[in-house]
Image: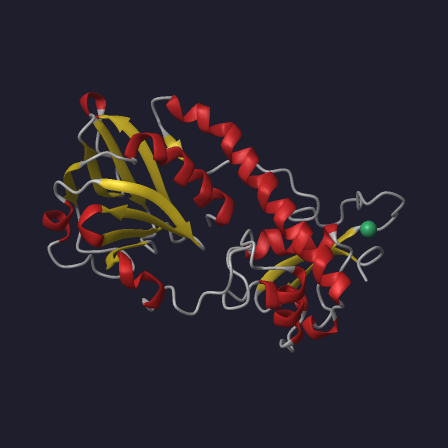
Length: 276
Ligand SMILES: [Zn+2]
């Protein structure tokens, strides 16, 4: 499933081909994805200029002229690829294809169709049901250690579960929650409200580091997207604990092994020896 760093990589990959460009034509090959497409979807996109591309949580936001934003969520298996109009070939599971005025094709491919596209009035975006309950972005300057500490204090769940709650903080995701907790030496089963201000500061710092590192890894793969397949957003990561069940912990001086347990239906990877 694409996590925040993948979505951010897709955004950065799309900027050069979409920002300031016109949507000349859009082809839609089914009625919808997770939800139906908005009424007159093709017609309303025709001729719109893309002012800029932003992101909120795991939603890509294509801010259009005339006051609308095209919201795209990749769901479980959504992929976006960029091709040239002359060589474009429709592939299986291509559900929406955008044609720019500069002879580029952006194809949205989604085998499982858990993705989403909607047109929302830009001025009312924050009040929209998709967005109004979302917590702060991990890189938001207003999310200070003290603010984060106060948010964590209100939660009775374990800290790992709290980090996955999009009302508390968006975009950390299952993989990066395990990684950030390991990096900060905090045990995933500890209750959220037991964290001290110093713990919260340490954890926030590691959340930012693991996400930043993944975004950088994604960014370094972007040049590969000039290749004909043009696929955006999936890249190889190096993880410290995620997927490393029974491997040696790499914390300096730690002789522990990585454990795997299921918390609220999701895998948690951690080291009992150095995470307290
Ligand atoms: Zn360890």
